[in-house]
Length: 110
Length: 117
View 1 (tube, each protein chain N blue to C red):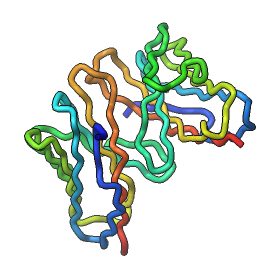
View 2: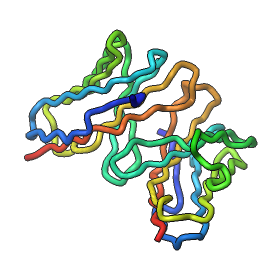
View 3: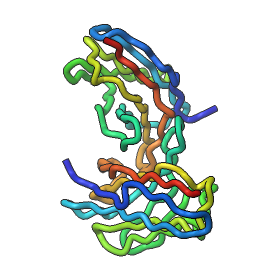
View 4: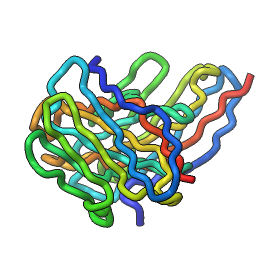
């Protein structure tokens, strides 16, 4: 079983719609959680950290469910520019290493 | 935010040659740098972690004699792919951290796309 699992997609979503995807992690010692965005042939860029209480940044909302060991990302009012691959990342306490999911590809269609 | 550069952004080389990739932190001192490799449609895989002035720590399955890492200064780390083969063709990305604490943010370089013919 992979340490971090994501549905690879692609998710084809019309512009303006709401889309959500989850990521599950296997290491219960994971303490830090992130969503990164990666455009084709580019480096990943931090989208948002995920906090225990959940957090929101504009149209983006991230949630953490420790009991079920998953994190989620919700995108509201999706834009064409949201098309990208979204990578789920976790890190264990006192560890340097980031553990990456393979990403979920999102395609926003006009 | 902090800026990390990589050079070259793209390289095509013949099988058997060596390729050096540079990773620089432009506006901060990077005490720790990470090298990742990403194959198409796959996740980033950590290859090694390097701290300035000491030997790199390689992940399991990564050949240290093939992927030479040097972190001689607080702003520069290099990855040399020795005797490159077509299976080494990949997207190589470095990241840098400005502290020695595990909670420090990692800043990513733009990546280097290596194609070995």
